[in-house]
Image (tube, rainbow, N blue to C red):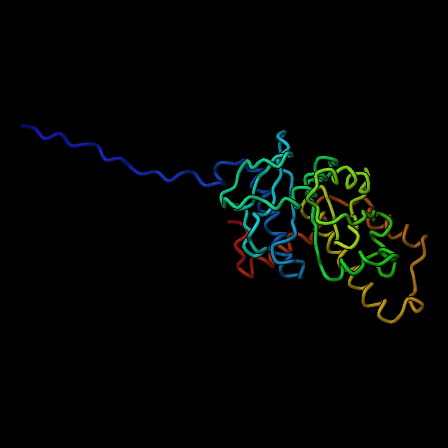
Length: 265
């Protein structure tokens, strides 16, 4: 009797997340994961309790957040969680979900502002210190002169778990501001790209650190930058630039690569 051989079945691995999403989404994931890893280097972390988010390119109004439970140095392009504007999980390879407070704040900003492609929220020591000062952010340095005229403020209402706070958050942020002090809480910056939001937060955080240091000498010994010079500095920062002039983000990514960060995975 002839023996019939069964054809061997080749086992196929399921496609990776990178293979299942668009090239545009993967690039956004990579940039956002890089921002998380850079935050570790610059000391912007609060264990697992703050959040950076980015809008997924396309018409679906999805955005990316860190998985609730990962340290910032564990965040990679693949393990970012994709959610919709109602907080429903669309993609989550970790199974951890997202922090409710993170969704309340970030979902609100993404819904209210079409230009908010990336939103960065921090709880740094200097940022919280300035958020508790009645004066708010002062024009004390070149760093703060770049942004002080753009900063808005939102009063502390407790941990951001209540969905109805989103209305007040959006109102206080306003239609054009890209930087907001969450009083007694922390800082928020948004941008059209991850790079834009990250560099805004860098200047915001540096401004707060400088302010805390300067105020240690006494409020009456400070020299404030004039309103006229603040306006001039803002105009200089926002002057038209030729394409490709922003060299800071590629330099930051090279630094991560030298440190063998796995943010691209």
